Structure formats: structure tokens, C-alpha cells
Length: 331
Figure (cartoon, rainbow, N blue to C red):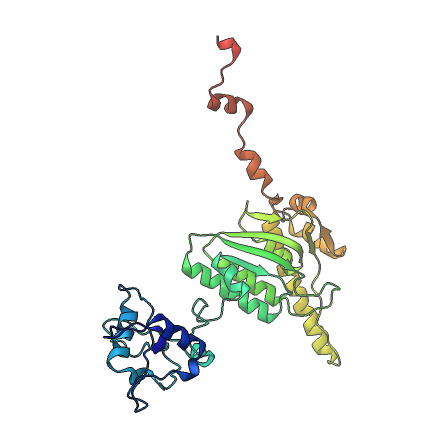
């Protein structure tokens, strides 16, 4: 390093000596006190930039005490010869950190959430949407009632949107999976709520789910064009090896629940109880959007909001008037 830096020295070397030193580097002798001998020849220094403070600092060190630059220990945290400079002149840059240091210093979770994201029902609840997408088993009933109570507590002036895709208290094949009281529990929660209830049927609304669809606010009950609503008589749960007296008790309870369903369904659809009872007695009564609207279960068939769009479209006369176009008869 000392052979390529310039320092002010009171001697000169001829060009022939310099060429010999280039051709035969092994015969060179460094004139430094580190080897305890005196130099017989001096190594010339190439010209340096006088404005480079770094090179000037090293050159002065070579001239004053060159032993400080020889046999230096290798330091992994600093660049070569940067530690000999004063801190007020240069800030010694650090070498690239090791992978272990990066692992300890880097924060890979800087832009991530500190807690897990909410589940889908919670995100829908933020939009005041309650979605029933399963049969009305006790777990579903508990969740739906809690959501209705929470939304009413948050803001009773805003509507609640109840989306229904459920087969009621039975499966699709008619096998009962829960008691009819599960549907009545949700119905009572709807009636207790001070908010408007907008109901929408997607897919299916059978039995008690059909009652929930009809129990929405008048004028706010919708049904998709490919959805199906169906009313049917309640099923008796499996009796197994129960005594005959217990089977009779369950049958009477089921009849009482059927009569309650007929009364409530007739109230919300505008039909007589006799009409609803006769339809149920004849077997499962399936309805598409048109039949459900005719029977009073829903108010409108929801099809991408086309009714609202058509209502907002101005007439051709209004278009001409707003555009400033006048009829030729006015002239």
C-alpha cells in the first residue's frame, strides 16, 4: 500500500532506478523501521489528487509512521485502512452484515397485521349482513340471534340484510336435523328488532326458512330469479324405541308447531290460515320467484337491480330538455 501512495519526501529517484524496481521487485528494500534496516533505495510515489483528503491522510501516515500500515490485523467490520482515519473526518462505513445479523435486525412482519384477520361472517356483519347458509341447527340459531341483537345495539336506524339459503330444520331430502323451535327463535328475534329487515332468498328457503323470508319488512322481501321457496309440514323427530305415549306427545307437539307456523305464515303473506293449511296438507309446495310473489312470500324478484336502474333512467324528452335541444315546433 505504501508503494502506491505519495507523501512529501526530501529525495528523488531517477527513472532508471524506478524501471529497475519494476522489473526486479524482489531486490527492493523498504525503508521503514518495522524491519530494523535502512533503505538503500526509495520507492517513487505516483501523483495523487490534492483534494482527496483520504489519500492525503494515508500519505501523511506513510511519511510519518509507515509501520502502522504494515502487518495490520484483518477486521471484518471495517473497510481496509478506514480505521486509521479520524472519526470527525470520515464516518467509517460498515461492511455488509452477516445473515445472522440480518435475521436479528430485519423485521419481516413490518407490514403485516398484528392479529389474525376477521372471518367472513364478521366481515359480512360489518356490512350489516346476516347470512344463513345452513339448516337451522342450534349453532346456527345461536349465531344468527347474536348477530341480530348486536346490529340492533349498534344502530337501530339502519336496516339489517338477511340473506337466506337454507333448508330450514330439515335436510334437502326431508330428514329432520333440528326442532321447529329453532326457526321460531330466529323469527322472534326478527320481530323483537327495531331495525328494518330486508330479506333475500338465494338458492332455497324451505319450511322455517321460508317463514323467515316472508317475515321481512313489507316491500323489502326479495328473491333471486333462480331461487326456490317451499312450505311443508313439520317432521316428527326420530322416535326410535320410545314408548307409545312419548310418541303421541311428540306428535301433539308437532301439530301445535304446525298450527303456529300456519298462523304466522298466513299473517305475513296475506292469505287465510285455511288456504295455507290446505297448501301444506297437499304436500310440499314449491314456488319459484313468480309463484312466491303471487302467494305473498316476497315483494320483488331481484335481478341485478334492473328495476331501480330503469326507474332512474330519464325519458327521451327529459334527455333533450337537459341537453338544451328544442323541438322544431318551438321555432
